[in-house]
Amino acid sequence: MRSYLKDNRIDTQIEEAKLLCQDLGYLPLGLELVARLLVRRQYWKISKIRQELAEKGLDEPSLDKNPKFHGEMTAERGLKAAFGEYPQYIADEDLFWSYTGLARYYNGQGLYAIAEPYYQACLTATLTRLGDNHPHVAASLNNLAGLYDSQGRYTEAEPLFLQALDLYKRLLGDNHPDVATSLNNLAALYDSQGRYTEAEPLHLEAINIATQVLGENHPHTQTVYQNYLEMLSQLPEAELRQRFPDEVVEMLKPKPPHP
Image (cartoon, rainbow, N blue to C red; front, top):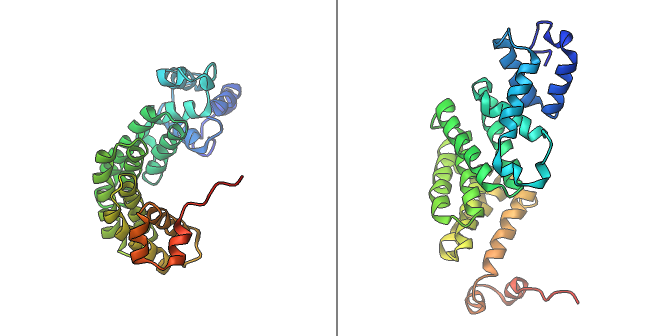
């Protein structure tokens, strides 16, 4: 925080400063946010911002229901509080990752109701601050769509995936790894609904782009290729035998479990 806070508040309130760092888990983004705020609030003591963060960060009913969070001011809660209270102090280049980091944390815990507002706010903030034509807007659309997809909310996810794909293509061109990822995500959405006729050309386009741009042995290329094979394995065997050699059909058959 010293790189932002040039006055003597850290030296004169060193114990409170240490506790503040602990509250935020020493996360650089959280420390930057509160330091930027303290620069603008010359009359605030560090204890004042700790009190505000504790009140904001601990007031989350959905977290209180989860025993993992009982009785502690976790780094995630501290960052949530700092971020939720002072988003205007986040630099444009940090905007997307700030929202996304929190959203992914809650999403990873299965706390979808908490993650969703962060994904939505990320989309709103990137649109407002960065404009309509920015890769982070496309990524925000993609992330929110992914959240809906993971919950089976396909009708909400599809238009967002389509918007993300269109924006990526306009901004980055047709042959870009992010376009391949976006195609793969949309194809997976269709796979989940059994819409294999719509999914297959998207899988093939994603494979083609990834192979051209990254090479056939790149992990991302291998991932999109395996996703395509997984889709094919869901098709009727009679259809597969009409389209592919026997060795391919045999490869796609489900393997019996090991005894």
